Image (tube, rainbow, N blue to C red; front, top):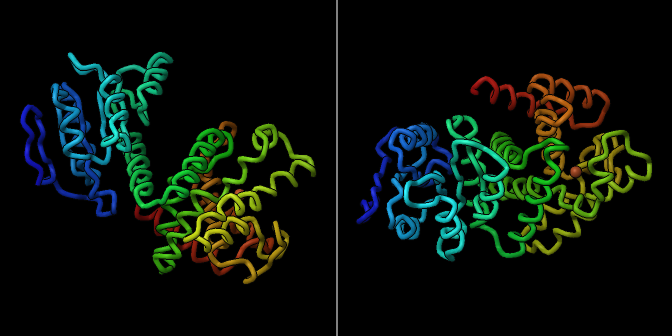
Length: 344
Ligand SMILES: [Fe+2]
């Protein structure tokens, strides 16, 4: 149990019921806001998600308290009376003891000037008040998952994950799919299939790194709106081989490489890069592929709304009829999604 620190109004709120028992539930979040009502709103929402929540009204010693309590995430209001939230954010990010803590800034308005300041202050996200519960939940979950993952990575892995994240952020709005949601899905489906923790971990790595090879493909091709020419298609197909090469230095993750290389093979042998068919396709690559497709289909894109889970499953079923996917695995995946949707 954390004790209140001197000069810092810190209240441990772990007595509230914990709803979510995932790894995230043990995460500790510090909410810094000098307006009690506004602070309580955010605290309540986070408590409902099952987080351990600490509060501060932004007193002068707040930086020391961040250092001492080492939260997994800080939610910081930018208008803190005497303290400038942007400056505080910058200090937290510049201190070696706190620089890895993700920070979400909260503002009343959202304008270009704010966006610029958020970037300059080194914050990870910006949320505008009144805080939307779903938006808050999504951002917090993403940042904490990312932080927990980074803590378990070695230096090479961290560099690769950072490159993959930047790449995804710069292109995902055009191409659909969402890193963290894909990661959550592979974990959940892996558990549903009773895979070993090692296999699930390899799937998680693949969820982050499978398209890292697209870094070598020009934006003009990757983001092209119309149909690709045969030459362009060939260029795009190279991403699986480039990705495999980029990830080769992951010494302890050799099992991730076949997932990256073979995530575009098809059950009937018409996929790439090797035209493998049936059980020749590594099992984890088969699993990952189905999730990747489902994730892309159910994500929003600029010119297309996300398909519903039912529509996405129907499209995957159609592709299975054509012979592209493992029918048994698709049947398992369909059951899994139906359970997820029912329990939503
Ligand atoms: Fe791919």
